[in-house]
Length: 184
Image (cartoon, rainbow, N blue to C red; front, side, top):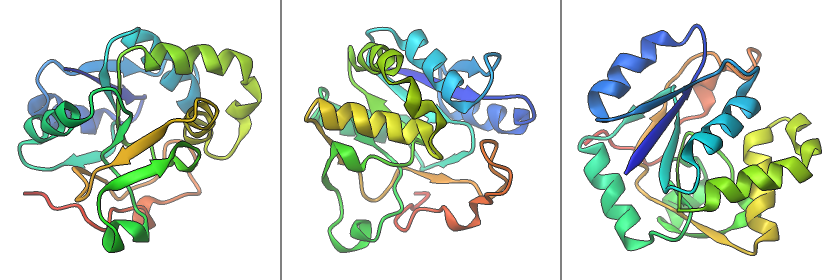
């Protein structure tokens, strides 16, 4: 399985922890200007391969790659989200959700050929780059138009680190933690 980490200048402190815990981690460094453009760069890196696409400001559960790959083995042709912060996580647990509801791109499995599909979709829908959550909005719109659902893994296998957002410095991540993440 390929793992692609999206990161940018000033966030070097996250890389050693992730490279130590994810063997063969590929780094997609933002030299293209902004989170959305770096996400598109990561999709280009993935090409037609299945990948786990992750942000740099996450904390991993124990045995992360084994647990992620066990989940992928169950649904290799579906987009799978390993981070969520919805109340339904506590009430319903793991579940299918409508593609148009996709939100929070901290750690997502993108099946074979879908990265290329999302990248191609982005060329037609340039306007999505300017929404407040452009990555999430674009993936949600792609899934919605493709009439695809996605799977949410509960308990979550990653959590969002508390800290200042690199996308919007006014947004602190103190209120953006998983309700179900367990380190072990």
